[in-house]
Amino acid sequence: MKFLTFSIKNKISYGALNDSGVIDLGSRIPNSSLMSSLSNSSLDKLQDLTLRHSADYSLSEIQFQKPLLHEGRYICVGRNYKGHLAEANMKLPDFPSMFIRLENSVVANHKNIILPKISNHFDFEGELAVIIGKAGRHIQRKDALHHIAGYSIFMDGSIRDFQFQHSLTAGKNFYHTGSFGPYLVTEDEVGDPTALDLHTRLNGVEVQHTKTDDLIFDIPYLIEYISSYTELLPGDMIATGTPEGVGFARNPPLWMRPGDQLEVEISHLGILKNTVAAEV
Image 1 (cartoon, rainbow, N blue to C red):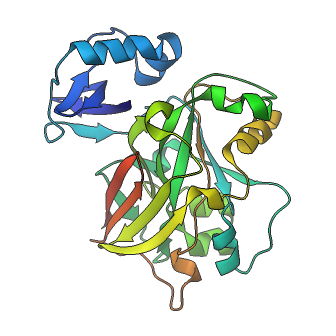
Image 2 (image 1 turned 90 degrees about the vertical axis):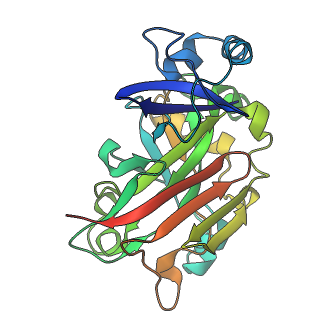
């Protein structure tokens, strides 16, 4: 199933997508959010509600919000595709490189991503995102997939001069430089998460393309590793890393500019679309 959080007529709700549009589940499950419903209700119950009701809204009527509103952490993995390490002339790591993004650094599908006033080095990174649905600490690799609520798309926009000259935390956390969405898609639609195609397009031109089987540290390992140092909680998002093709590794570098259109597409997960705007 494809779930989304959306706003319409100044109301925020969540729903499921069918062939004709959006079924408003939030209005039918009072005092709930998408994550609380996925955690407290069985997927069968949500699927039953979806089958029993026709669409309340078309996609053109709603505004996308981030799939999860303030319900978890953005836990990000750096340098996790073999091709990306090769283009950056880096050796394979022994352990994942981890960092955290702040809530206000990330926007929803169709929202503007912002080029800050103090830098022109705005880079794109299309990524597969994993959404945690069941809490756990010291999760065993063999049990890891049982802790997943679904999958989504993340764009880990990076201000490279600050990342390389100042710190990773600074470069990854400028206001509204990343994006997340459009949907949370459950395993029944996704299938094997190592067999997905990831495409990033800038102004219609493909700049990244890979299969997710190029990951260095796969999803079960990442869940096992992260849960060894912090409890994973429902709503936590793990961004699994970006493939080759990023702007800084090109000659000359390719930076995003105001007015640019960016799309990240992953098979079965939809297309995450954003426009670059200048900071005002």
